[in-house]
Length: 190
Figure 1 (tube, rainbow, N blue to C red):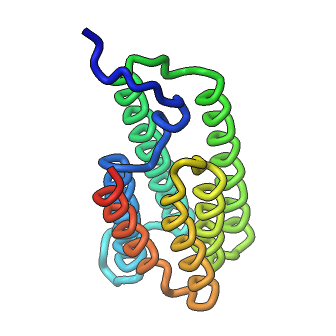
Figure 2: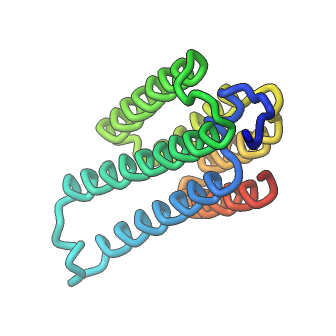
């Protein structure tokens, strides 16, 4: 006998930011913020091994960490969607999920190019605010009509981005707040 025969829209089921997936992404945000802060503080300490690296190598490390964060977050969304589609015995790849995946990849490439160009031209203080604002827009435009509770994360990210424009040194705290918000959202919305 088939279990869970409730029909669901694949876009709603597959790529949702809820439950364990949201908690994982929150953990990734927390780890990324901690690693960035540790590397920056270690780079500024005399005699620390990271202090002997050049700023170009530190930039490469930061970009590598960001790519790792995006890869892990994307994989957690993918495998969560795959597991959910299998539990409802539906096809994972259909026109909606392919369209979403294309939008997701285009958004990632756009954000990556924009942030690396900002870093290249020396606008380091604008990296975190612009990332948070773009992340807020991404969450807002990829939400489902049925799942309006994702607006909480979108509005929080937008407010944190505006706060980072005002106080540029607040970037590490915004990572922590966004991580806690993702974990809380994952616990509340299952």
